Amino acid sequence: MANDSKNLNRAESPKLQLYSYWRSSSAQRVRIILNLKGLEYESKPVNLLKNEQSSPEFVKLNPLKFVPVLVDGDALITDSFAISLYLEEKYPEHPLLPKDLKNKALNFQVASIVGSSIQPLQNLAVLNYIEERFGSNEKFPWAQYHIINGFEALEILLKDVAGKYATGDEPQLGAQIRDSLRIVYFRLTIFQFHCVFSVLVGSVNSTFEVHFYP
Image 1 (cartoon, rainbow, N blue to C red):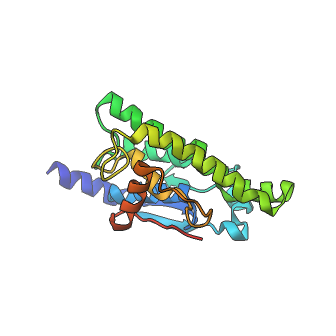
Image 2 (tube, rainbow, N blue to C red):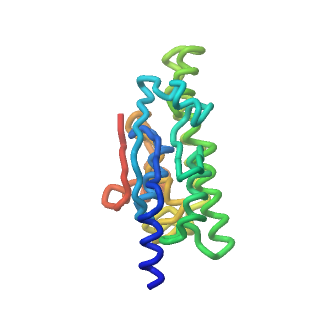
């Protein structure tokens, strides 16, 4: 009966709206969470290559001109990490954070390394700036340096806990490492990072949405 009521309330609620770009790993992290939690949402594509993120309509949603943006009724949330925590709090079914405080902190650390110390430093806006300021030959070494630096930290952090997913055998917040890095595009060799490599390779057969895109 309780489940029926919960499903009815969800059906009556406005559908979630997600502004995203298919190649954005930040937006992809949110799509993963929405799918894992079984939440229906309306996709609002924003083509970054056509600079649609700079349109007046989108700037009203996010003055930083970044995807993703989540609209949930009268709530408007930007930044994939903030969106992740919002969804975890509001829609606790299929939880992505363990109850154990130590393991929860581990998931926060992994998500923070990916979302703060790796991904933003190799996104489109940063790479365009590096190319304009220092030349096209500098953007790949820049991205490679920061990705490898993050991988080195993740390898140490995950060496005793990695399983099917980054932080164990259940998909949790820290498991989003799987979708976050354009390995092929940046011509990276990552075999020396055994934990990271096993997690990334495992994503091919997972239920996650994964792209190793050029």
